[in-house]
Image (cartoon, rainbow, N blue to C red):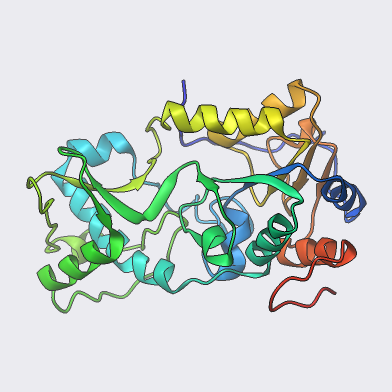
Length: 299
C-alpha cells in the first residue's frame, strides 16, 4: 500500500558507521545521472526543524493524520490554527546552502532529477526545476468536496480576517508547518470554508496515513529506474514513501549514497552514508567539481 504512516524506528547496532569521506559522492556526481531524494534534514539550516534528527520534534509532536482531519471539525480547527501560525515561519524560510548546491549541480547537468519528501518549496526557491514533491506542497490548498485549488497566501489572508488579533505564544514549529499550541489557545479559532462550494479545505499535502497519488509514485519509480545513482539527502528514510525508492534502486543494482548525520533505515542498502552537515558537504562537493554555488564558500 502506498501510505505515509507514522513509524517508530530504532537504528540497529550493527548498522555501518557514518563516514566523512565525500569521495564516493563526488565520483557519482562527476559521472552524472544522479537522482536526488531529499528529506527534512536538508531544510534544517533554513530554520525548519526535522522530526527525527538532532533536536527533532517527533517525540513531542504527533502529526495530523488524514483520518482525524476529515472526521473531526475539532481536529480541523486545531490543525488550521496551528498551521496558520506555522505558515508564517514557512513563508519566511529561505533556501540554504544545501538547496542552492542541489540547484547548481542540476544546472550543470549532473542530476537526472530531484524528488523531495519536503513540503516547503525550498528546492524550487533555490532554482531547481522539475522537482517532484512526493508529499505535496504547503503553498497550495485544495477543497475536499469540489477539488478547487488556491494559493496558501490567499487562505492566510482569509484566516487573518476571520481571526483578528490571533497571535498566541508559540512553543515551537514542526516540519509539517504545525505550531505547538494548546487546546485552550485554539478553542476560538475560526476555520473558513471553500469559496467555491463551502466545502472543507485541506493543504495540498499528503498527511500521515494518506495515500500518495499513484501517478506520482510511478513517476518517481521511473526516475529511479533511469538514474545512474541515487543520492539521499537529509532523510532518515523511516517512512516507506521514501524508503521504497532506496530499496528499488538497491534491488536494481543502482548505487545508493546517503548524506545524513544520523543513521537511516536505508543504510544497509547504501554504498556509503556521509555523516556531515548537508550545506557543508554539498558545497564542498560542488567546489571539487568546479560548480559554483551562489552565496556560499566551500570550506
